[in-house]
Length: 194
Ligand code: GTP
Ligand code: MG
Image (tube, rainbow, N blue to C red; front, side, top):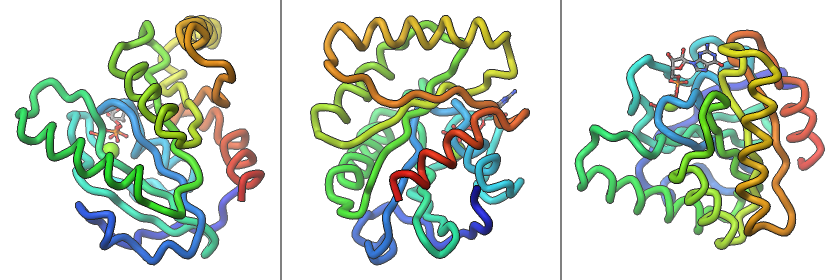
């Protein structure tokens, strides 16, 4: 488990991020999928990352330090329908540069809404990460909103789509920021990589 977490800095430019002297894990996914809520759940700090019922809350690359040992990064979500084209382009440039050039990045967790059929935008993003050779894991969020059985079916469908093109599937977790489901598994996994 994680003992202590605190905010470090927010940026639009990966060059201004903290010195890359510690391993880093980033959380990304569709706007409103629950990235910031999951970060608060994992660190057991209610208001560490800013959350909102409205999509598009997180706009910057947000660094947090955990146990003086590793960086946790909250990223702005993709796929917010109401955003402008220029915002979307700015997002892609900022995020792609960060993901491709951040030398201490160990792994990216892509969050997926456990209630939805496999979404094209998620598959495309995960494929992009895979092709870029960036290690990734999947976290299926908001599992408290339905039965665990339904979440498992959702994961199975996602797995099936990925299997068409992926030889080795990424590690997968189910989570709920409400109930704390997945916290131990995700924390143990991160500790295992560290
Ligand atoms: P952006 O920063 O806008 O990209 O969104 P985000 O992915 O960081 O989502 P955020 O954590 O702000 O959560 C969005 C909404 O979903 C908020 O209203 C949360 O309370 C809700 N939410 C997030 N995770 C869960 C969950 O596990 N269960 C339930 N029931 N609601 C959740
Ligand atoms: Mg957020």
